[in-house]
Image (cartoon, rainbow, N blue to C red; front, side, top):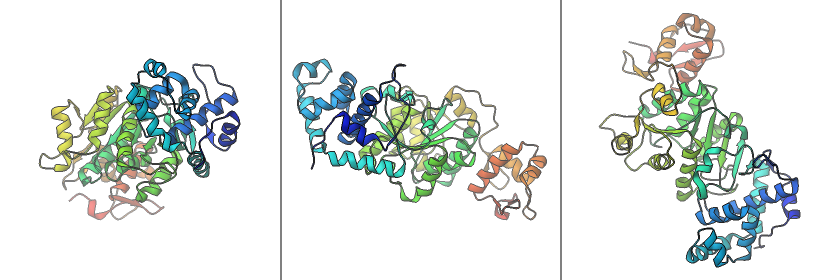
Length: 415
């Protein structure tokens, strides 16, 4: 193992091939040498610590990433320094003991090489694009972020909603997540989630179908798709939004990192909605972070007999979550006006459909294929709204398009 070193020369060499955001700090940009050194120190810290390390957070907040790393590499934090930054003698010893086994130059170099290979961008608190919401995490904020895709998706002005829920979601839960996410994404709300199976994946897919913005926060490095079954989905998210992690490339997702990832989902978002969750679902951890940060929290009710909704009912009963039954409810949670109709309606066949998809279904035929503009004329809707509804109906298996026009699948036609 080659011991980690810190110098301006090493920093410039190692950072040269890595994409970074335009830097600024309080309106006073650092010069290129100092910027490289600070960015490199953040990379090193991301390899040294596990997410949410409060000891590292205190040290970096007090000394800055470069000086803090120098102190850590020296293996000594004086009693007066420790006291001034709020660390006890035991906390200091424990912190140095945690960091020491990871002071490996090879690990830092490997993370940078992997990041460059997949085109990942490094974003640090010095950068103008650092998400403002992360500052609410204080000493438990990430030391940096790694992003694939469009880093600007992180700091867009549009409101953000975290849509989270169970991996083992029911058809009801996935349908509501898709309807909710599509309606909001189509109106400019950024959908944030964790790219897991179930509710997370449904939320991301719906936002993409509505041609909206979506952000995926991972528990492992952005160079590895997790879950593997969402490789294509993560690629699509990166193509129009961003796939983000606080752990360096090459890092494996672990239980601890999943729990800590949830705090980022809550902090980056303006509000959190839990669509479906069991009594002990990990989504309740995200909800807890949102509540701790003072972010608005909502939960979608489900059948009282469904174990998959027990966690949502718990949030509604015990944690004062808002009851979310429509896009209007979620918009109100975000503090924005959103003139939409009801999120879900039950048609004559007992299926859940939005008001828009019901009108589009009425305008489609099970035999003749119809162009989008024809469907818009028949339904009395705009071409854009029809396109959004058709995208959702295709995801739900209710309609298909062969390139010549859209057709309502016979199994979904009203009886």
